[in-house]
Length: 175
Image (cartoon, rainbow, N blue to C red; front, side):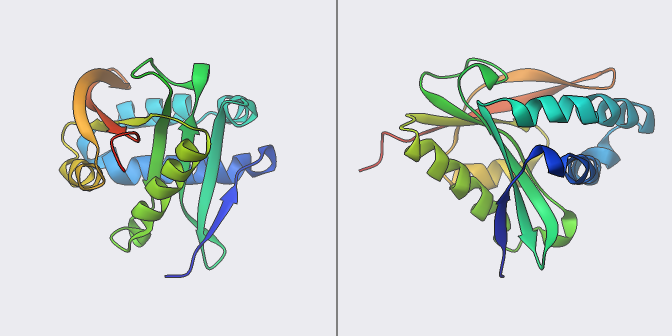
């Protein structure tokens, strides 16, 4: 499948908000109450919050475009932009989402390999991310790519505390 990667800028905030809300709701909407989902989407993907994240020099967003349409996106963090301190000299994959119409076509691998390329270009020793304990497909995907579960944390959706597994991939174990 032909695709293009585009770095997100502040001019893209509306499109980022749209794909963020769409993909999160597609992925987790059936497992959360409508009230909790609405509260989370309003808070997490507020336009001002997204602008602040885009402007952070230690964060980067990328759109994955198919036929000039945003199919998904990636957000990676370094240094103090990381949501928590998981490993030394690490890159966090904070968000990696594809719209349902584009899943199971190899595009998730494109995004995770983009994150790994960024990590390696910045001489990172590790990559890490959080994945919902009930998202078994994503867990298998990351495990296949070399991620290992090292811990867990609580992720709040509305007023519902949920468990995310913390997965780590060492970039120094490979020859």
